[in-house]
Amino acid sequence: MKKILIGLGTALLVLAAVVLVRTAQYTAPAPTAEKIRARDIDARSVAEHLSAAIGFQTVSAQLQQQPTQQQFEAFIAWLAETYPQVHATMAPQRLGTDPDHRYSLLFTWRGQRDDLQPILLSAHYDVVPVIPGTDDQWQHPPYSGAIDDTHIWGRGSLDDKSAVIALMEAASQLLKEGFQPQRTVYISLTNDEEIGGNHGTAAVVKKLEQDGVRPAWTLDEGSFLLRGFIPGIDGDVASINVAEKGYMTVDLVAHGKGGHSSMPPRQTAVDTLAEALVKLQQSPIPGGLDGVGGQMFDAIAPHMPFGKRLLFANRWLFGGLIEKALKGSPSTAAMLHTTIAPTMLHASVKENVLPIEAVATINLRVHPRDTIDGVAEYLKNTIGDDRVDLVVRQSDPASRVSSTDAAGFKALASATRATYGPVIVAPGLTVAATDSHRYEKVADNSYRFNPMVVSREDIHGFHGTNERISIENMVKATNFYSQLIESGSAE
Ligand SMILES: [Zn+2]
Image 1 (tube, rainbow, N blue to C red):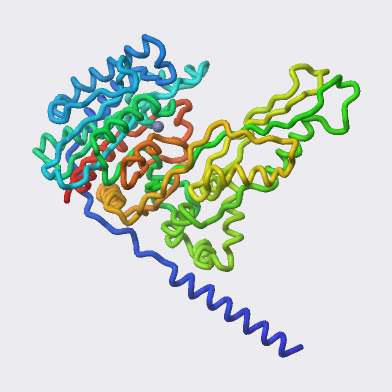
Image 2: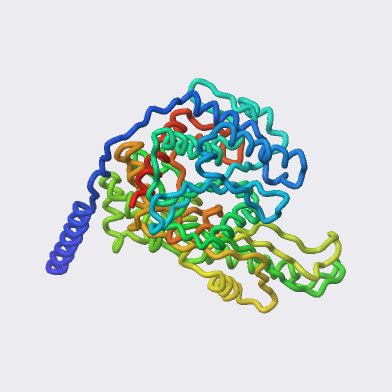
């Protein structure tokens, strides 16, 4: 007995030693300190330009309506007036799949070297509508572009006119300095991101394809510098997203006999459907810390306090525990696996009529490790019921995973640190769909990042009420894009 106890004690000591040594080794050098290179940017003028841009009600969901089309036209005219040098040098082409409504703009800043691959920077100037009935909940009217001591307010201030304006400001600034890029720099300002990009962004991508343009990398909206989102990390984390989840909608259709509800069979179509939904709820699509989600934590976890670092350093022992904790929160769970969200249900048309069919619509966001066919197969096998048909209504696979070793990622990391100091830079995953899923078809790598700091209270502004951005963020973003164009367009 004593021997067994000693043996057990020794094993535990060895285990503890291994865990501690691994934790001690699991550190990362402090984030590289780049010299902050701040240009002298006129904060007031940048804020006023964003304010004016917010005043145009460029709501893409209403693009069918003539008054809205006039808003898009007026915005394009205002851009040309406000940034004359950018327009003169980069002669924007107006693009759209419908020749009468070409509202996306593709600027070409010709590089000095034709033998180098170009780069493409993108942002969208369309916005989502203000939720009806919420106008009076805004501290400043949603299209006022009000500027107070610290912020610019209004729809589009975060998503994504801030990036549009910061890009234009940066290009103007560089032109004033006489800068000439080595590589050609494309700037794409699109008009229909919020409704899927089928007209504007699609036309931009088609144009690039036709012209045989293949950017080394593209940058479009995505994540931000995240403040206070990651437990255990005090500083900002720049999440430069290297991939984007796919989109899939399926109908589950359960069949029944119908008839009068006074004499129901033991199981109706609704019961069959309910069983299928419960099975899916109980067997989520497997996932974990492999892939992009894991890459993100690999970049962040070495900077965490000892207790958390100990867990991540010893995934062989605590992997299950970590994944369980991450899956406990919807936002981190979405990083780890393909999500299943039943969103719509319908069955009988009348309360006393048994349904012949009961249908559940399920929206899935496909993790880059999964394929559309694989997910459909998983759903079928998990339900395992011949009485339930699965109809895939819409499917867009997940994006490729772009490289963190490529020049584009490095240029982004370096411009981030030159602007914000030694922050943690981590690759991440965009869980919703953006224009990037189109750009990736014509580019070697696609990155998704907005160079602004967001905190938890800012989040409600995205597609919600009281959207705003700080003036400081706009100045920093302008600085960032200037650095990025300079370093990203070099040899
Ligand atoms: Zn957006």
